[in-house]
Image (tube, helix red, strand yellow):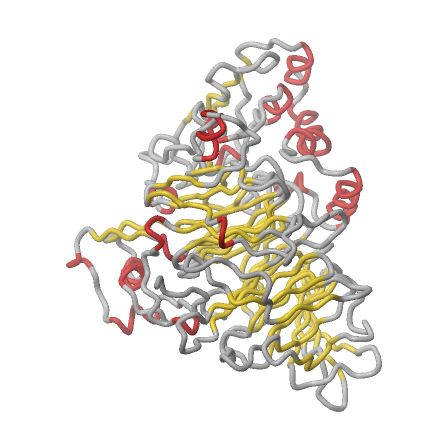
Length: 612
């Protein structure tokens, strides 16, 4: 009894115990069982073959002070409730609106925060058969159906979002890899649209709709290979980050329709993406079980985080726990207007943390210490929280241009069959590759097993030993085998470098670095995709996809199992964070003291209420 009590409090070692609280430097986050939202009968949903449960929030800014509204889909059903959060228990017997669909299932949804009032909200809902519906769950009106005859796209809607700052434009992505821009004022037409090429680039093209009168879609984007799994607008609405099944993150200038930068997953498809509050960093997650941090300004991977044991389904920044410490205010330069120009927050929240963050970003010197907090949830039913700190964001330059560093892998008591390998690479001129100055930069350091890091299989250790190309002249140094316990490992290690590289990329890269279990169906599909255009063997070790040992590896602050089924939602609100699993349970976790770091001075644009 004592063990299960400890586990419930987050201190036990029982792996299968569901945690109901966890502790970070801010304090204790607690699950509010009375604030759980689900179908009214509270029966776990049999999720076989169903689309992921998704959650959308909106604040209608009514006079009662309880303006938060929540929408979620479970199977064929869509619910719209008053969201009481940390204030009061959820009353599931009184949904404001409930819809049950036949022949198709809701897959995603998004509120228009600009137009939301206590009397009316505009909610877009995407469906598994490709249609998009515009509904008002307060007025209970179905106003419009887009792609009704499926003439525009027949594949599943993967993501739908209102264009920031617009009352009428919205963007829809599909499993076909296409993305369409719609205007709610226009019709879709009774025939399949004809397109005219507007712009073409590397692995993407954009077409306009050719017709006598203006009709939907206004634009058709074809992005990458395979499904376009998710997209996210930058906080200022000017850029669009897309993640696809081909494993690429592509960032576009949305208005100019131009590619800004790309990144390749370590392996497999990318499933989710989000922006930091200041638009300087993008985090993506996917089938490599990693979270990857990409710098928008430098267009390069600056860190990877490993804590999940299966695919990462959602990543999100916590706008309210981005901590800023000022060191010397005299170093600041520029006016408040300059700071506003330097940083775009999408929402005008006048608050100390974000204004200090803008000061931090308004100068190239380092007057302020900033830590970004983000979270991730995955199919392993775990929630991870991560801190992106100064030593990762601004690594010190190496003392000399040529630097030798040693990675000792699995140094702490390797399991039977594993080998201890030292990988010495010289001539490394990457400025961010200083092992001495950036803790955790080694791909498999001794501290990693504590945070569910890379699995310790013999093959995995050896493939990780593939020598990396040096930054300066491409000089290659061979790995040194200290002890070979398993004969298979030593045989593999004695292959010629060329053979090892080929085998690594063709077979072992997928098998041994697959930290989740990929069904043969999806991996076959992946093989087809990668062979058509981009060979992973050519991207690994480049700026698109640096090797594991070439970028810092983050450890999660916390990594807790919080559900029985795979997790599909993570949203940070001011006084709580919200998670949901495929069984259809939406959970509210109260922040320490139930109060966030930022004040809700602009409730209309923030889906959070004030603690009453």
